[in-house]
Length: 458
Image 1 (cartoon, rainbow, N blue to C red):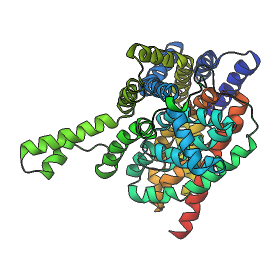
Image 2: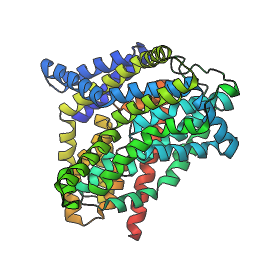
Image 3: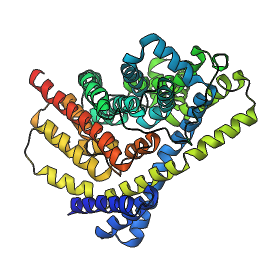
Image 4: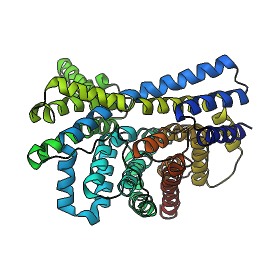
């Protein structure tokens, strides 16, 4: 019955948006309330769930969105995106530009959360499209595909890293096995899929991209442009490395005391590790990147601080509705979670006998359909599958890959990534389903096939 209510909720959302032309923000809030009523949650409980969903979503992503918009504005207004575009096209040529985007997206997306890496790179995609005259979807699909692949398959991303510890899997082996489907997934979901939508005529939202023209002498140097763009990547890579080497929940004071017999030295080492972790947080990393950009792409370019601050304010105001839509998506997800959908799926899955890899993939996929978040779907599925992993002796590293892959299936209205794709690429709901949802499903299926194939060898 809970899954039926999820289906009804999705249908209501479609009707509100497509027939009555409701904005996504209002449609999501109304649908969240209706689904709560269908699940007999009680009016005050529904309100509490909606507010919690908005609060939790905003608490985890609002600063990333804001600082990402500011950094993107600096990269765009300074001409840094043009500098990088010209250099990459000159080096690799237009024929290879999609593969360049795949590689750049993968390297940036490996240490960074999907949302943060997407916001760092989207100005480059806008500029690539403008300067090369290539369709936006032809360039945007490979970027979104490679970022999703890194997010679902590979440590140090939170979900695969967490599940590795739940299943007692070797994180290094999880990373190694996760690399196997990366190339086929990029080629299928990134390159091949983009060919079907090459002729989709969409332009970047006017409030997010001005398409300003630059003279050669106005452009910042390549080194400065790369440094500013990659600053959040470098900072987050420090934290990812520390997590990979020492674990996410390590006591740094205890660790440092094991290294140094001198208490003062141990304290210094502990503080250094803590500082590295602080600056590697996505919120802090992007804030520091904005400060770096204000100097390298602002002050160094001869711009006044007053002008830069006004530009930052415009960057934030341009994403106001996107922030609200994402917040409403978080409310919808929370109502589905609080209504007991995940627990219902857990009870059903416990009585099914199936290939553990396929079962783990299916459980994660159904939870993703129900509650939206790929990370939550992976972590919830891990708790459900743990007894099965322990009792069947299935390879735990491959279970991590299968579960993470399943968490990408069936992306729709309750997924933040769905709305980011729609708003930043300026596509319709129908086009978002046809492109984003299909792309996510392709990445999920390739990951499962890789896990099953590797299970025949390992």
